[in-house]
Image (cartoon, rainbow, N blue to C red; front, side, top):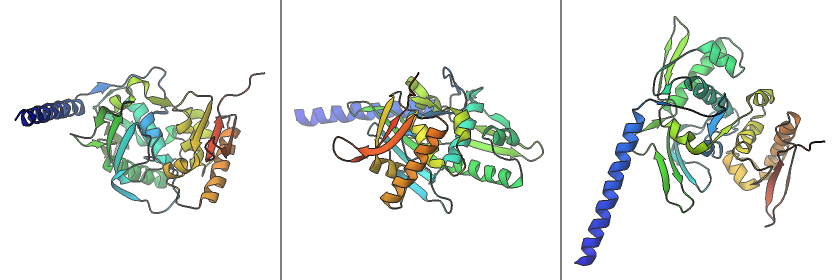
Length: 292
């Protein structure tokens, strides 16, 4: 009898906690909130997204469509995504949208000229690019996320998209006469940026990376999530994170080309593939430059 009573109490506590989480997230999804990031400029992205396969250097062609798929990420995050696989160009658009929305409370509509948006990500202006931008904005609006951030002990820090759907872009409309977009970002983006859990990408150097060097762009975002002057990443984890389906030896070649590109624009000082202490291949990146 006592055991049944204790179980009922635990179930009731869990039910109340779930209800409280539901109320909190529903309220956050509908309350415009200012995004304040010290030193913020274009190029800000939450660390959990930068460390996942949510955005990947995929090859051109038909994109994979995910349906509530668990994306590659670190142990401190569960990221479930529905939508087209996003690439680094989508990441550029998203960072630009976050930048322009940062001047307003998130949750309020932001007006933005389409040419201004393309110029910010250093794309040419023209009919083909305008059509491309419109397609990608539709894909970002259709994409939905569920993200659970975890504490070191494995317990939940916060959840986004659990009680109320979280669209990457909540909504957008296009004014054909003014050539202007009006879009809304979910206020819960603020929570993902909270506690300084975000990276500031060197946008100038990002724009210096050559076309076709999306793998270098992915590494740049990953590197920015850590302040460590020497960073190591398991090669098999990187391959999965970058959604690379080819042979491992081809992936090694591609990674080495990306490293050379990062060295060229001085995002890193040096990088190479080597064996870890556990005799597994890893990518080692030296971030700091020697000062003479």
